[in-house]
Image (tube, rainbow, N blue to C red; front, side, top):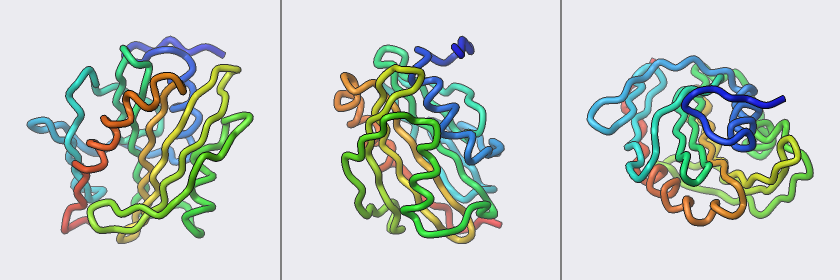
Length: 177
């Protein structure tokens, strides 16, 4: 199965995002304002990366970004109220469904805007193509947030700084339903 949706790049990272995000099936409720994606219904805002990243659409994502030059994607899926329960390590595995030949590189606690979460980095294959994935899973005030960075292994490190800046620009809003 090959996807050729406008606004998304090579089939490997595009398919990886589709597969990874279908587990959340979020409905987008935010908007872009002055370089920020703001979603008051789901209680967050985040600064958008600038260097070559564009807002795209992806099933199941509240926010999807593509860097066509690096064949890389960033996505956010938030479920409010939380649709999946269980410990964060189990939920981190859920966002990796669809990847084949998964090699776990690391899994460790992370803080995002002062909230504890779990970061996971893996390599795997989608439709035979290699991809590397960094996911951050966080639970806050009845919501579950999945943040993903997907790229081919050869561009993963180069674009990793963009995802790091994305995480640094994340802010939970004080109020949410």
